[in-house]
Image: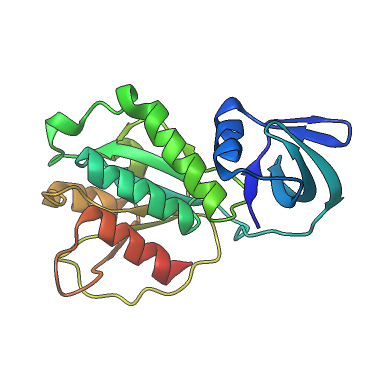
Length: 220
């Protein structure tokens, strides 16, 4: 069954954005049942046309885990960053924070020119993976700003750490992976002083987009 996010409710009907309407037209839907997500809740609806669906009933579908999963992604190459955005959305991230650290490639620093594209990737991944929410893409932070976020549990992947087993989390959590060059030792020391849990994921060195997928799959 097809799933869509609605942007407006008018009586017993939902209407959709221009982008979603175009997608519906491509699918050539004709008077069939669809699932519509509106304000974090799902409804079973009858498709009317490319911009309207009639509500049949509200459902009890909830595919969210019930707490904040904040993912800190380093500013890596655009193609890899896009892969990471899609996968962390599918795996349950609620917020995504780009960040700069000591070894960030300066050619990857400015995310704003591509923000609209990145948010579209997140939206489409949310719709495809049956999420109740669309994760937010936050403003770019520095590594120090990340460490000062008001999130009790913070977990950072560092290849030189002693191997610590990852177990599922049940509270708000911030997950941090480093850029291509990893983390500077001074950054690791700062993280330890902030009581960040430092873990080694595997024996091999993982790319940033692989590391965050690994962490999410083990922790959620």
